[in-house]
Image (cartoon, rainbow, N blue to C red; front, side, top):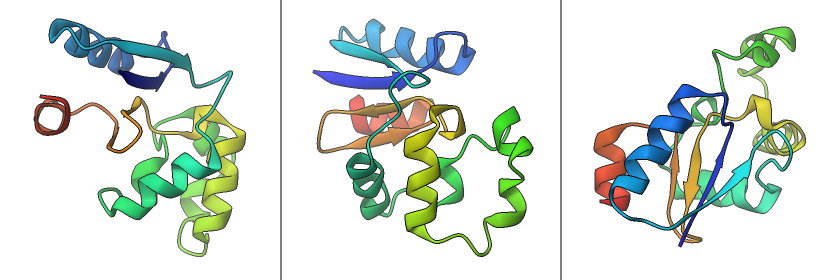
Length: 117
């Protein structure tokens, strides 16, 4: 069973969900705007070393630009990043997919094949 944090108005999230459904993987969808990933999950994603701090942020999102996070990234601590991401799901790169042990952030077919294949 997979859990996917996403936003149904997001084309990338819909593509990822279609990809997972096409492999007959059972997916529980969580609206990231209503329930962002927990601090614990975000820390676990960072601990894998698969994603940089910047890669966890939706850098093309309006909220990212509005809060001027790009200029703050150089001095932002991991703890500050976790707080921002856990408090506002619109700041998170999406979708985030997990089985409780493995994680993918964003949708890249090669990465999905490797992890959820």
